[in-house]
Image 1 (cartoon, rainbow, N blue to C red):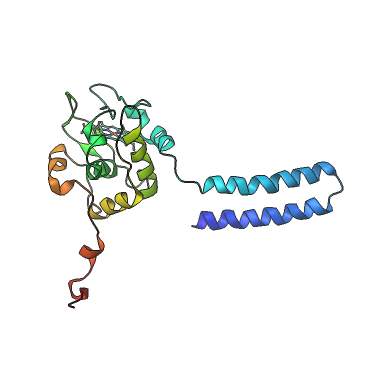
Image 2: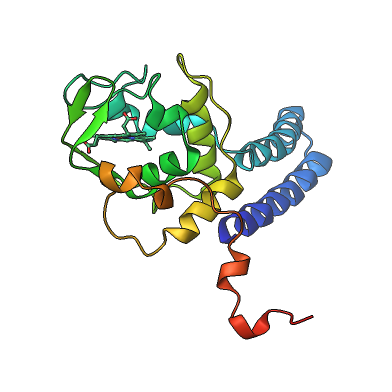
Length: 195
Ligand code: HEC
C-alpha cells in the first residue's frame, strides 16, 4: 500500500511539474519531452498494477529446478507435465507449493527423495493463483484454474504448518481439497445465532 501511495503521489507531482514545463517552455523540444512523459507516466503506473503473470512467476521461481518446459531432471527434479500432483486435486497442489514437500514422493514411474522448498512467504495469494493456473494449463496440461480465494482458504487452514509435507500426509483426505469457508470455523461458539 505504501508503494502504491508513493507512486501515485509521484505521478501527480511529476505531472504537475511537467504541465508547467509544457505551458512555459519556449523550446519546442522541452514541450515535446514534457508531453511524452505526461503520457508515458500513467501508462507505466498502469502496468505496475496489472495482475501477476503466472508464466513469468514460474520462470523466476520454479524453472531453475523444474525447467522451462516443466520436465525437470529425471531422478533429481520431478516433472510437472502430465502428473496428477499438478493437474489433480487443487488443495493438495496449493499445499505442496505453500510449504514444500520432502522425502519419498512418487511421480510417474520414479520415486524422488529430494526437498522441495516452501513458497508461502515469497508468493502472495494472487501470485500463487496465477502461477498454479499457469502450470495446470502449460505444456500438455489442461486442468482448471486456481483462484486467489482458493489459495487464501488453504493458506489459512495450513497456517500453523512449519515443515514440508510428506507424500504420506498428502494422501490423507484431510490434507486435500479446498475448505468451504473458514468464517464458520473461526467464529467463537457463543456468537452463533440461536434463532
Ligand atoms: C530448488 C529446486 C526446486 C524449486 C526451485 C522448485 N521445486 Fe518443486 N520440487 C523440487 C523437488 C526436489 C521435488 C520433489 C521433492 C521430494 O522428493 O520429496 C519437487 C516437487 C514438486 C511438486 C510435486 C511433484 C511433481 O513433480 O508434481 C510440485 C507440484 C512442485 N514441485 C511444484 C513447484 C513449483 C510450482 C515451484 C515454483 C514455485 C517449484 N516446484 C520450485 C524442487 C524444486
